[in-house]
Length: 623
Image 1 (spheres, rainbow, N blue to C red):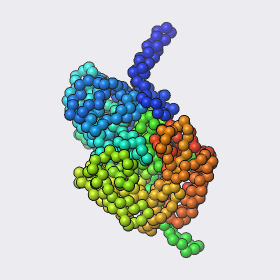
Image 2 (cartoon, rainbow, N blue to C red):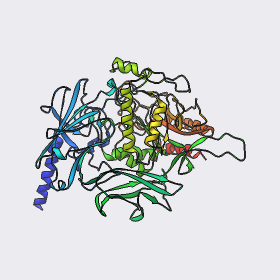
Image 3 (spheres, helix red, strand yellow):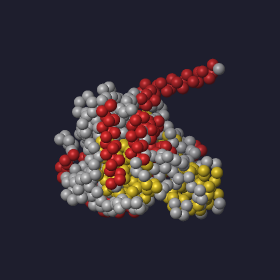
């Protein structure tokens, strides 16, 4: 008994030693989950829930870092940073900006288990790094990547030493809004207005796994055909193999196998019935599995359908959103996915899940993921908990009328994103006239984002542009999106300049919902409204400059009453062709106090039971 007690005590001392080396930086508000962050093992969950291998190693934790001129090589550390929290965040333990002309360096050592080396290649995975990264292992450059929102993997086998500690270094540069890159709401001038603190560097899990040298599965893409009652699964793989084995399970019951699987009695996925089927996928060589992964999928369809005419009266008919062959009013919050302590990164997996749980509890059935892309586990929780998602492309610019007076952008960027936004009309708007290099990078990153998340069936709508921010060549962007994935609806420009070439016409109107533009050939939605502000003392990012889109409410009672009045307006629009609505927003974000929750998730500003009843009544009003 004494020996066991001693071992536990030493383990505790080791953990406390690491904790002593790290603490959240700054004195801004934090979420309750910040206290649960373990610096020895932050975000320990398997990062790729749709494609699981049994062997893996999490590389999150304390790394060395330095901020240096871009032309300098890494020499020595200036401190430690907690990966995967970006350097500007409190949870990184650093909370510093990476100024123009500077680079952020990371360094750590790691070991490769001896059993991994036989017959395997070693892959190093990054969930996301914002924005441009170069990677070295043991002084050998193993790869580079651009794009702040997508995972990438590098084969580091040839750079590894035969045994002992290996050294990993990463160099990151990030122009944020000084360049042409997709960056969403990040701004060097932030926090101000709707623009937030920039995010630089590693912000999702870093991890490592062995994969067979001979052949390996890279990804898969499932599509459900409701008419044929058939699930098709496209598997992407590399190497030497004879066949692909796919097995679909309902619990422990084998439903079928093959890359086209007939499902006679399908259990369809919806927000009310979020059923997941399990998958076993393997590559076969002479009948023997050379690589295998476990995954899951759902069975659902999404479509634009012209509603049938009313036999009892003369009336207009409208295009509606149909989930699994039934009309569905899609209603939910604008969800920006920001955290006061982690910025782009939730402190824990429980925190990541929490906002989705509350969205469901509040009676909503949809989330618009606003100009940000989340880690794979977020989409997994949407699949598992049952919520449909409209996925935005992070913007590459914004029209000049929306900018704060403080502006870090150079003249070229300001000039090339100077266009006209026509929010309530089909005419009058203009595209950004941007260099081809910017356009090429947009398509590169948007294509990689679609490829990275399209297997998550919770996503039902792609949104290439928002409010004319960096908007260009809209028909071409829609065509590109359709070619990448033709199984979802396309909202060509949420609240932006309309080319009428997608599936959805999307109007923004603050504060009350309104449909000032309507197109009979498309699905019509109100993609943003609300923004009712209510500051809560003790839970503010800053004491001054807090704001809401509409009138700042006096108290919680006024907030929910105005919200209920807006809900009655929505109910009146639904018989007139409105098919969905997005309320701004899930939580406060920095200076915005428009959230149903405060930024630290500590205060819910409404009576939750009444709030849920209001939201369900809106959804159910579409008969």
